[in-house]
Image (cartoon, rainbow, N blue to C red):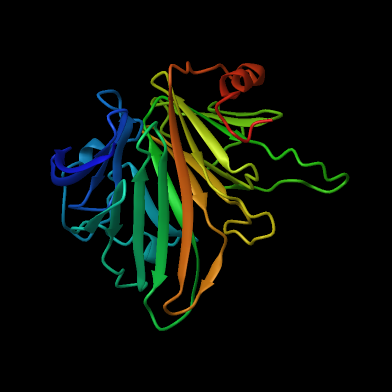
Length: 302
Protein backbone atom coordinates (compact mmCIF):
# COMPACT_ATOMS: atom_id res chain seq x y z
CA UNK A 1 0.00 0.00 0.00
CA UNK A 2 1.22 3.49 -0.87
CA UNK A 3 0.95 6.25 1.72
CA UNK A 4 1.35 9.99 1.12
CA UNK A 5 2.10 12.29 4.04
CA UNK A 6 3.70 15.61 4.91
CA UNK A 7 7.23 15.56 6.29
CA UNK A 8 10.02 17.91 7.30
CA UNK A 9 13.18 16.98 5.42
CA UNK A 10 16.55 18.66 4.86
CA UNK A 11 15.34 21.78 6.71
CA UNK A 12 12.29 22.21 4.42
CA UNK A 13 9.09 22.06 6.47
CA UNK A 14 6.63 21.17 3.71
CA UNK A 15 7.93 18.10 1.93
CA UNK A 16 5.76 15.19 0.80
CA UNK A 17 6.79 11.60 1.43
CA UNK A 18 5.48 8.79 -0.78
CA UNK A 19 6.26 5.31 0.55
CA UNK A 20 5.22 1.69 0.29
CA UNK A 21 7.51 0.59 3.18
CA UNK A 22 10.00 -0.84 0.65
CA UNK A 23 11.20 2.45 -0.83
CA UNK A 24 10.29 6.06 -0.28
CA UNK A 25 10.40 9.31 -2.24
CA UNK A 26 10.46 12.80 -0.75
CA UNK A 27 9.37 15.79 -2.83
CA UNK A 28 9.97 19.41 -1.87
CA UNK A 29 7.06 21.85 -2.11
CA UNK A 30 8.65 24.89 -0.43
CA UNK A 31 10.82 25.14 -3.56
CA UNK A 32 11.28 23.27 -6.80
CA UNK A 33 9.77 20.84 -6.85
CA UNK A 34 12.60 18.38 -6.45
CA UNK A 35 12.30 14.68 -5.84
CA UNK A 36 15.02 15.19 -3.27
CA UNK A 37 15.11 11.59 -2.03
CA UNK A 38 14.60 8.12 -3.50
CA UNK A 39 15.90 5.04 -1.76
CA UNK A 40 15.17 1.92 0.22
CA UNK A 41 13.34 2.85 3.41
CA UNK A 42 15.80 3.65 6.18
CA UNK A 43 18.81 3.37 3.84
CA UNK A 44 20.94 5.70 1.72
CA UNK A 45 19.46 8.34 -0.53
CA UNK A 46 20.33 7.41 -4.12
CA UNK A 47 19.91 11.05 -5.17
CA UNK A 48 22.28 13.95 -4.63
CA UNK A 49 21.57 16.53 -1.94
CA UNK A 50 23.54 19.76 -2.35
CA UNK A 51 24.10 20.60 1.30
CA UNK A 52 24.83 24.30 0.80
CA UNK A 53 21.32 24.85 -0.61
CA UNK A 54 19.22 22.56 1.57
CA UNK A 55 16.42 24.37 3.37
CA UNK A 56 16.84 27.62 1.43
CA UNK A 57 13.81 29.40 -0.04
CA UNK A 58 13.13 32.62 -1.92
CA UNK A 59 15.48 34.86 -3.84
CA UNK A 60 16.07 35.49 -7.53
CA UNK A 61 19.07 33.21 -8.04
CA UNK A 62 18.58 29.69 -9.41
CA UNK A 63 19.84 26.98 -7.02
CA UNK A 64 20.80 23.41 -7.83
CA UNK A 65 19.33 21.79 -4.62
CA UNK A 66 19.92 18.28 -6.04
CA UNK A 67 17.47 15.45 -6.70
CA UNK A 68 15.25 15.21 -9.76
CA UNK A 69 13.94 18.22 -11.68
CA UNK A 70 12.16 19.17 -14.92
CA UNK A 71 13.73 21.62 -17.36
CA UNK A 72 13.27 22.32 -21.06
CA UNK A 73 15.98 22.13 -23.70
CA UNK A 74 17.93 23.54 -25.56
CA UNK A 75 19.83 24.99 -22.62
CA UNK A 76 19.91 28.76 -22.44
CA UNK A 77 21.02 31.08 -19.64
CA UNK A 78 17.81 33.12 -19.75
CA UNK A 79 15.08 30.55 -20.22
CA UNK A 80 16.60 27.48 -18.57
CA UNK A 81 17.77 28.91 -15.27
CA UNK A 82 14.46 30.41 -14.19
CA UNK A 83 14.55 30.40 -10.35
CA UNK A 84 12.23 27.86 -8.73
CA UNK A 85 12.56 29.06 -5.16
CA UNK A 86 8.85 29.56 -4.45
CA UNK A 87 6.17 27.23 -3.02
CA UNK A 88 4.78 24.56 -5.33
CA UNK A 89 1.13 23.56 -5.66
CA UNK A 90 0.45 19.84 -5.29
CA UNK A 91 -2.43 17.42 -4.98
CA UNK A 92 -2.67 13.76 -4.10
CA UNK A 93 -3.41 11.33 -6.92
CA UNK A 94 -3.59 7.55 -6.93
CA UNK A 95 -0.34 6.17 -5.47
CA UNK A 96 1.37 9.54 -5.56
CA UNK A 97 1.13 13.26 -6.13
CA UNK A 98 0.87 15.81 -8.93
CA UNK A 99 2.99 18.96 -8.67
CA UNK A 100 2.45 22.26 -10.50
CA UNK A 101 4.94 25.12 -10.58
CA UNK A 102 4.07 28.73 -11.17
CA UNK A 103 4.12 29.65 -14.86
CA UNK A 104 7.59 30.84 -15.79
CA UNK A 105 7.27 34.60 -16.34
CA UNK A 106 10.01 34.81 -18.97
CA UNK A 107 8.96 31.79 -21.06
CA UNK A 108 5.26 31.23 -20.42
CA UNK A 109 5.97 27.53 -19.81
CA UNK A 110 4.00 25.73 -17.11
CA UNK A 111 5.77 22.69 -15.59
CA UNK A 112 3.96 19.76 -13.98
CA UNK A 113 4.99 16.31 -12.77
CA UNK A 114 2.87 13.32 -11.83
CA UNK A 115 4.87 11.07 -9.52
CA UNK A 116 3.53 7.60 -8.74
CA UNK A 117 5.00 4.76 -6.69
CA UNK A 118 4.17 1.12 -7.27
CA UNK A 119 2.25 -0.38 -4.31
CA UNK A 120 4.67 -3.32 -4.43
CA UNK A 121 8.34 -3.22 -5.32
CA UNK A 122 10.49 -0.21 -6.15
CA UNK A 123 8.96 1.05 -9.40
CA UNK A 124 8.38 4.79 -9.86
CA UNK A 125 6.51 6.33 -12.81
CA UNK A 126 7.02 10.02 -13.57
CA UNK A 127 5.02 11.91 -16.17
CA UNK A 128 6.62 15.26 -17.02
CA UNK A 129 4.36 17.83 -18.67
CA UNK A 130 5.14 21.22 -20.26
CA UNK A 131 2.34 23.57 -21.34
CA UNK A 132 2.87 26.70 -23.44
CA UNK A 133 0.69 29.40 -21.89
CA UNK A 134 2.17 32.15 -24.07
CA UNK A 135 0.93 33.67 -27.31
CA UNK A 136 3.78 32.48 -29.56
CA UNK A 137 5.02 28.98 -30.50
CA UNK A 138 8.09 27.72 -28.61
CA UNK A 139 10.42 24.98 -29.86
CA UNK A 140 11.58 22.86 -26.96
CA UNK A 141 12.21 19.42 -25.57
CA UNK A 142 11.11 18.21 -22.14
CA UNK A 143 14.32 17.62 -20.20
CA UNK A 144 14.24 15.28 -17.22
CA UNK A 145 17.33 15.52 -14.99
CA UNK A 146 18.17 13.20 -12.09
CA UNK A 147 21.18 14.17 -9.95
CA UNK A 148 22.63 11.03 -8.40
CA UNK A 149 24.65 10.79 -5.18
CA UNK A 150 28.43 10.89 -5.36
CA UNK A 151 30.63 7.82 -5.63
CA UNK A 152 28.65 5.75 -8.12
CA UNK A 153 29.24 4.32 -11.58
CA UNK A 154 26.95 4.92 -14.57
CA UNK A 155 26.45 2.53 -17.46
CA UNK A 156 24.95 3.80 -20.73
CA UNK A 157 24.30 1.27 -23.53
CA UNK A 158 25.91 1.76 -26.92
CA UNK A 159 23.75 1.54 -30.04
CA UNK A 160 24.61 -1.77 -31.72
CA UNK A 161 22.35 -1.50 -34.77
CA UNK A 162 23.97 -2.86 -37.96
CA UNK A 163 24.04 -0.13 -40.64
CA UNK A 164 26.68 -1.42 -43.02
CA UNK A 165 28.86 1.44 -44.30
CA UNK A 166 26.74 4.11 -42.59
CA UNK A 167 27.13 5.45 -39.02
CA UNK A 168 24.78 4.01 -36.40
CA UNK A 169 24.90 6.48 -33.48
CA UNK A 170 25.33 10.11 -32.50
CA UNK A 171 27.47 11.52 -29.71
CA UNK A 172 27.54 15.14 -28.56
CA UNK A 173 30.44 16.63 -26.59
CA UNK A 174 30.62 19.87 -24.61
CA UNK A 175 33.56 22.31 -24.79
CA UNK A 176 34.86 21.31 -21.35
CA UNK A 177 34.67 17.55 -22.08
CA UNK A 178 37.99 15.74 -22.44
CA UNK A 179 37.92 12.37 -24.17
CA UNK A 180 40.96 11.26 -22.18
CA UNK A 181 39.18 11.94 -18.86
CA UNK A 182 40.08 9.19 -16.41
CA UNK A 183 36.45 8.77 -15.31
CA UNK A 184 35.10 7.56 -18.66
CA UNK A 185 35.55 4.24 -20.43
CA UNK A 186 34.23 3.80 -23.98
CA UNK A 187 33.53 0.09 -24.30
CA UNK A 188 32.20 -2.04 -27.11
CA UNK A 189 28.72 -2.36 -25.57
CA UNK A 190 28.66 0.38 -22.92
CA UNK A 191 29.91 3.81 -22.04
CA UNK A 192 30.97 3.70 -18.39
CA UNK A 193 31.28 6.87 -16.32
CA UNK A 194 32.60 6.93 -12.76
CA UNK A 195 31.60 9.76 -10.42
CA UNK A 196 34.75 10.79 -8.55
CA UNK A 197 34.46 13.28 -5.63
CA UNK A 198 38.18 14.08 -6.02
CA UNK A 199 37.83 15.46 -9.57
CA UNK A 200 36.26 18.91 -9.97
CA UNK A 201 36.58 19.09 -13.77
CA UNK A 202 33.17 18.95 -15.48
CA UNK A 203 32.44 16.20 -17.98
CA UNK A 204 29.38 15.80 -20.21
CA UNK A 205 28.32 13.82 -23.25
CA UNK A 206 25.08 13.06 -25.04
CA UNK A 207 24.17 10.04 -27.12
CA UNK A 208 21.37 8.61 -29.23
CA UNK A 209 20.52 5.98 -26.64
CA UNK A 210 18.15 3.86 -28.72
CA UNK A 211 17.83 1.20 -26.03
CA UNK A 212 16.15 3.75 -23.74
CA UNK A 213 17.77 2.96 -20.39
CA UNK A 214 20.76 3.85 -18.22
CA UNK A 215 21.95 2.46 -14.89
CA UNK A 216 23.86 3.72 -11.84
CA UNK A 217 25.65 1.51 -9.31
CA UNK A 218 26.07 2.95 -5.80
CA UNK A 219 25.64 1.93 -2.12
CA UNK A 220 25.53 -1.76 -3.18
CA UNK A 221 22.34 -0.86 -5.06
CA UNK A 222 21.48 -0.40 -8.73
CA UNK A 223 19.28 2.46 -9.97
CA UNK A 224 17.80 2.13 -13.46
CA UNK A 225 15.85 4.71 -15.41
CA UNK A 226 13.89 3.95 -18.56
CA UNK A 227 12.42 6.26 -21.20
CA UNK A 228 11.33 6.01 -24.83
CA UNK A 229 13.70 6.95 -27.64
CA UNK A 230 12.04 7.71 -31.00
CA UNK A 231 14.53 6.81 -33.76
CA UNK A 232 12.96 9.04 -36.42
CA UNK A 233 12.43 12.10 -34.20
CA UNK A 234 14.49 15.29 -33.97
CA UNK A 235 16.32 15.81 -30.70
CA UNK A 236 18.31 18.79 -29.35
CA UNK A 237 22.08 19.06 -28.95
CA UNK A 238 22.90 17.53 -32.36
CA UNK A 239 20.26 14.83 -32.03
CA UNK A 240 20.67 13.07 -28.67
CA UNK A 241 17.95 11.75 -26.36
CA UNK A 242 20.23 10.96 -23.41
CA UNK A 243 22.82 13.15 -21.72
CA UNK A 244 24.98 12.78 -18.64
CA UNK A 245 27.05 15.24 -16.64
CA UNK A 246 29.40 14.85 -13.70
CA UNK A 247 31.49 17.02 -11.41
CA UNK A 248 32.91 16.55 -7.93
CA UNK A 249 29.61 16.13 -6.06
CA UNK A 250 27.08 14.45 -8.38
CA UNK A 251 26.33 12.70 -11.63
CA UNK A 252 23.28 13.73 -13.64
CA UNK A 253 21.26 11.22 -15.69
CA UNK A 254 19.25 13.21 -18.23
CA UNK A 255 16.59 12.12 -20.74
CA UNK A 256 14.92 14.24 -23.41
CA UNK A 257 11.70 14.18 -25.39
CA UNK A 258 11.80 14.93 -29.14
CA UNK A 259 12.05 18.58 -30.12
CA UNK A 260 8.53 19.97 -30.48
CA UNK A 261 7.23 23.26 -31.85
CA UNK A 262 4.79 23.87 -29.03
CA UNK A 263 1.95 26.12 -30.12
CA UNK A 264 0.03 28.32 -27.63
CA UNK A 265 -1.92 26.04 -25.24
CA UNK A 266 0.08 23.09 -26.59
CA UNK A 267 1.33 20.33 -24.28
CA UNK A 268 4.33 18.02 -24.46
CA UNK A 269 4.69 15.02 -22.13
CA UNK A 270 7.69 12.86 -21.34
CA UNK A 271 7.64 9.65 -19.25
CA UNK A 272 10.26 7.92 -17.17
CA UNK A 273 10.23 4.74 -15.13
CA UNK A 274 12.65 4.14 -12.25
CA UNK A 275 13.60 0.91 -10.49
CA UNK A 276 15.98 0.19 -7.63
CA UNK A 277 17.68 -3.13 -6.91
CA UNK A 278 19.35 -4.25 -3.68
CA UNK A 279 22.54 -6.27 -3.17
CA UNK A 280 24.13 -5.35 -6.52
CA UNK A 281 27.88 -4.75 -6.05
CA UNK A 282 29.53 -2.16 -8.25
CA UNK A 283 31.41 -3.96 -11.04
CA UNK A 284 34.79 -3.05 -12.50
CA UNK A 285 34.90 -1.55 -15.98
CA UNK A 286 35.05 -5.04 -17.45
CA UNK A 287 32.10 -5.35 -19.85
CA UNK A 288 31.60 -9.04 -19.13
CA UNK A 289 31.29 -8.25 -15.41
CA UNK A 290 28.88 -5.40 -16.16
CA UNK A 291 26.80 -7.63 -18.43
CA UNK A 292 26.59 -10.25 -15.70
CA UNK A 293 25.47 -7.65 -13.14
CA UNK A 294 22.74 -6.32 -15.44
CA UNK A 295 21.41 -9.63 -16.77
CA UNK A 296 17.96 -10.34 -15.38
CA UNK A 297 17.59 -6.71 -14.27
CA UNK A 298 17.47 -4.62 -17.45
CA UNK A 299 14.35 -5.72 -19.31
CA UNK A 300 15.75 -4.74 -22.71
CA UNK A 301 19.11 -6.44 -22.25
CA UNK A 302 19.79 -9.11 -24.89
